[in-house]
Each structure stands twice: as C-alpha cells, then as structure tokens.
Length: 323
Image (cartoon, one colour):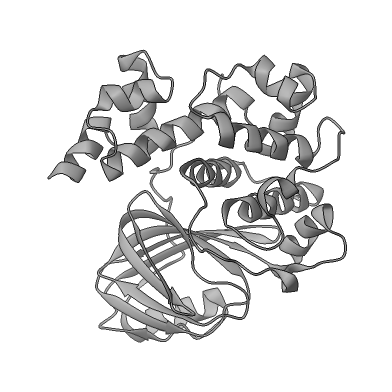
C-alpha cells in the first residue's frame, strides 16, 4: 500500500491554547528568543513534535499580530497553510501566502513582520544538524559559514520538494528509541533546506555529492536534483535510477530507508504540489491543463489524490484565486 500523507490533516490536540500574555510567553519560550509580539494576541494554538535536531510545529494565530523578533537559535522554515505572513530581515521583504514557503531568517538575524491571522507549519533545524549536513558537502565549513542570498525557494520544484520531504518525515511514526533514525532524519532535512534556498554552501551543481553508496542520503539528494530538473517530464523510475547511477532496487531502498515512501510516491507528491502552486497563482487557467502539465491524465484519480493532500478539490483552489 502506498505511503499516504495529508498536508491538511487535523492536529490531534494542541500543546497550548490561549491568548494575551500567556500566548506571548509560550511562543517566546518555544522559539528560544524574544519575538516582540504586538497586538491584542487573540487565540493562539501551538503543537510541537520533536525528532532529534528537528521540531515540526503547527501554529495558528487567530487575530492580527506584529512581531519585532530577536535572532532565533534555529533556522525556521514556514509553510503557510492558510492566510499570509510577512517577514523582513536586512531590508529583504517576503510575503508568504497559502501554499507557499519562506525562511523566517538566517543565523543571528533579527526579523520583523506579521499578519492578520494565519495557520502555518514551522520546521526548525538546529545549528548541529545543519553543520552535519554541510560536512557531507564541504568538511571545512560549518553552519556558521552559511549565508542565504534569498529566503524564498529557488524554484517551484525546490519548494515542492521541501514540502514533500517535511510531509513524509513529519508523518513518520514515533519509535521507542529514535537514536540513529532521528540523526539521519535531521541530516536529510538539513540537506533539503540547503538545496531549497540559495546560499553560499550550495551553488548550482555543487550539492551533487560524490558518494555513490546506494542507500545513503546522497542517492536521495541526487534523485531530488533530477526531479528538480525534470518534474514536468515523463520520468520513469528506471530513468531516475539511471540518472542517479544506482539500480532501481537501490533507489527504492534509499527512499524507503530515509523517507519511508517509494520514489514514485515522492514524485507524485511533488507533482501534486506543483499543480497546487500553478492553480494558486493562476498561471494555468484550468484544472485540466494544470493536471496534464504535470502528468496527471486520469481526472478522477487526480482529484482524489489532490483532495487527500490539500483537503479541498482542485477547482476550489482555482476558484479562490479567481474570486
């Protein structure tokens, strides 16, 4: 049975539900800094799941809020599920809307912003996790050397792959002894972050690792680069394995080991996300054209998969853009 995840699945209970000063204190403590939250601070709901050096958060703020935050001790990537939120750091301003992704700030970087109420998924990665990933690419540098030239994903496909990886890793079941599994998860997510946002560590093809061992992160990373280039194409699993210089069986094993899904399931998630992006921004005028552009030729099956992933029909996504 295919591994199935839903980005819009409900949260099974929040760790915190409250407002006012209680909400401010909770969020400051959760993110390890003074967020400088202003506004009436209506109801805030927050849930956190921690795996190794990564924290997966769901955060809902139900009233207008502004923040003037000090630097955070982690990198936080924000996936907007509803509403919109704005971030400004070092004169760079980004406005993230439903279905988009943004990096809140770089290391040691204060930021300002806000929104009129929003529902987001925040993924936090520690310095240690990013340093471990960088060591795979350049042993002479650490997380302290990372400088981001952009805080939004470098392409639609990169954004889709970031969200697909978070979807899969956040859906992994808890085990009694995480140990090595959590360390592997943290490293894979850190690698994905580095290839999602332009930075001085990864430039162009520089992130194509030389490691040819079949079931390593390197195999998954090579597959991500191929998908980034060819998400629109008729890309078979044999084609993908050949471009990754591994056997189809090794490719399957690498994805099962690190993402608990098959390469074809992962590719489908990425393509569904790409359809969602073009319907959201209006770059495709009809659902049918958007679906076929990314390889979905069975309308009924496509609509079912889309609804499972995003909690709405594709026509509803398109109608929200055109309304």
